[in-house]
Figure 1 (cartoon, rainbow, N blue to C red):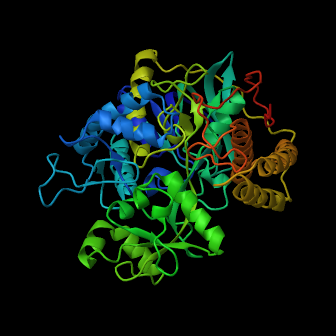
Figure 2 (figure 1 turned 120 degrees about the horizontal axis):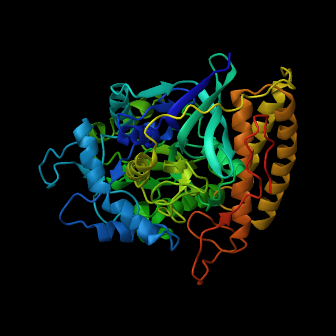
Figure 3 (figure 1 turned 90 degrees about the vertical axis):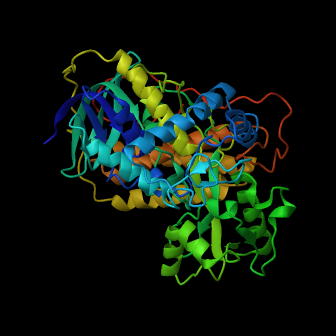
Length: 541
């Protein structure tokens, strides 16, 4: 049976952004965290590299800001970058106090005591990490503390459907309880979207299955602006193996001297950028894509075998063990790798306080566009963004909460006009078609014609999914497909508006970067915000 819950704050998403936000809220605040599946199916859990922060005396906030700005190719908001980077040290100290098991400097070279790595785009070693499984350690640390707080309740297997808004004010949301297939209603003073990115819109991705753009699509349907959706980061090095499910191979391997080579062992990155393997991810991904297409090969190779066996096993234990499962010994042979969709640089527009266009609605982490990443995210700034904006959003929420939880009765979900579906193959087929043409037409290299074809196919899918959604009972697969097709159209429309190549957006029709002062690509939905409980059709303004 459907239920209604009342909380001070409802956080959609149980990754690093969501859990951190919950922990920064006062213990007097009642908090619900909606976990789509379980608390290990978020991109932050799988992050290998680490968290970029200025911790050493030979480094500076100014240098970190400059590196971030350069990687963002003129589209970063410098005030936001400075705001985020300046808070890095405080974020690391907070995690250390929580017991985060960061890797320490055994040789006692660093002043901070941490072992710091250098990754693509960074001019200094400033990436603090927990071996090569930083995301896992971070998630487990945060989750352990969340479980200690009686004011925080986690709702597993709850996938958010839509926000309940009235007069540009968010009042709650609907969520499918996948345990009993009923739709529950959550009422709250404040809603925080921390749902992560949308890389599952592509056929190949390093992200878990839940990265389906849910928060972006929900906010768009509710009336929020989105920005820079054309900038999708493709991680250059994901393990190429039919059973590996796009296992990400951390950038830290290149930071520690790993080289990229062709099947015959020839290096190639120097032909594309003087920084070689340490060039930003967009350049490395395009270089790999170019070589694969030029030679008609399935993958390239990443080789760290020239380092000692002890070094490799101590620095990259997760990757070593995972590759061994596929009979690849990285201490003796190179790793087959390919690019895969990895990070959504655009998203819901927010300020440094996390607030969106809609009152009482916040967005934190990859789901949001803050201005930090510009047209390309520099390595290991993503977890930093989660931590910094979780703190600032929680501070803003805390200041504006009323003293008592408001028990507001919201309309129940209406499914009186729908039936059970016996055509689930439609969802599966549309899901596959969407991800394949997004990969083929809106991937690493784009053209006007490819984008037009993708937009045409997307709008056909919108019509089909709309009809299906309006007539049959919902399922998690249908909800994710509904969100993915919204995000796909936002990506395509944004890409069509940018008449240049910049950062992660590369088009053969406009290969040069414009000399004019760049501006973010902003899309504005043309809808009336409604609190009606009936199913809401897809919006395609």
